[in-house]
Length: 287
Image (cartoon, rainbow, N blue to C red; front, top):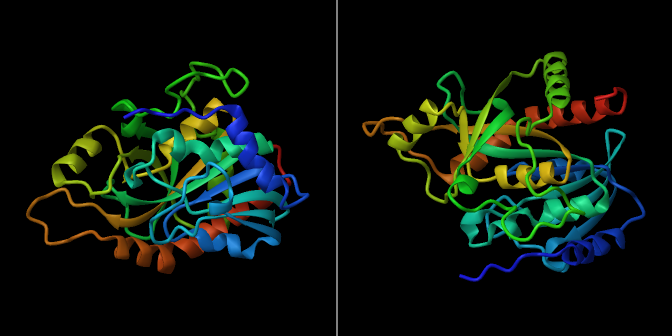
């Protein structure tokens, strides 16, 4: 398969469509995962752009991902929110998966907050919990699909970006402070990114746990790699939508419907309060 790489002009063309929809200048980007997109509905002074109208933008085919970009005000911050994302398993190249982050870079966004629905690998977790991402295992990238493959444009970022601190320490501290104030249980751990779309086998879960993973999902890491290449600060939160199976004798099964249900009932209210609190505090602190 021939891979077509994007150039800066492609990202600028897409950014121009978003610029034409609003005079507001977003500085914070949010990517909302499966079932988590309703937060964007509460944005004030909102400008809406359907992703099908943005050149080069990949279109989501998964339930729970609206395919819309919203720019406006949320807790005193000017934000650019992606209601839904695309995934590698949908058949897109990894460069297409990361395309929206590049467009955010063109818009001047310096901080990215990314969320996802994930399976709990850490047995201390429960469905409905939140996990602040400290680090990740980019299994897609490690097996040959890193979004930085191909020609490197130095105006976008250096050829070999450092990934020793993928998720910003000050933002993690701020998130814990907000969680404590809001009485939200907030774990912290390592997120493993697999390609999907099949859920993991018990043997794979045992392997991931042995490698230090606390949660597993099918997104986020490619976007974070590009965000760090762009020198953005990153905060990531996983909503634990289900607990994974680590034994073949289990009668428990996992489905996308379960992910959506747990997200709507348990995760969204707590995650909304957490993100609102972080955005609010970012406006009053030096984080």
